[in-house]
Image (cartoon, rainbow, N blue to C red):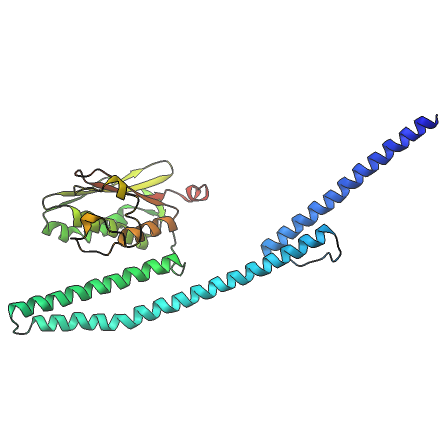
Length: 306
């Protein structure tokens, strides 16, 4: 009888311990959930001031959030400083470069020797290149630091593709290059202004590297999640070992140094694509041309699932 009583007491004690542990665990989990919720909305503060592990965890979380907040403020301060620096550089260089172009044009109108005429044209060309470089560096720096934001919305692709292509029709005509747009219907989620900028970079390269009498083709292919704008040229192509490098800042392949440019257009294009949850890739075979593909999400659901 005594043994049964002892056994019953042990079972009850064990049940009590189990129930008590579960109650404590539930309280701890509830407190952790509350701590995380407060951390997310920025209202976290320590509530337990004893020598328990929960109190130690609260203290560590409070130190972490304080450090994170300080880090976020420092990052924002650095972005503000970069923004101010970029604006100053852009503003301070705009007038001198514009004056260089103006004076070079005035020089060309003067009775100069043939050598002088060539020098004046060279000055104007270099000033225009400097102006273009400053503009593209400003754009890429602002995109990288988040100073410039893109606003992707669902839009038809045709107007943006046509506007970009029209800017290169004259240049293509001068080189007797057929610039063809076909099957450019479709919709995607993108910022028209910046996507046009990306397409212009791709078209500029296509026309630049396609030899006289060649062709550049622009088309749209619609897939389940993405719309793909394909720009195909009949240029020299890109070696396979360089295809991953051409999207780097200032990278120029060995065969590109005879052409104008500083090697930042493709880098900027990739930045624009990524800011819109898209991407850019290249398919190329040396001697058979290249195809640059700009992929843009077809709807907001595609963006949220990435």
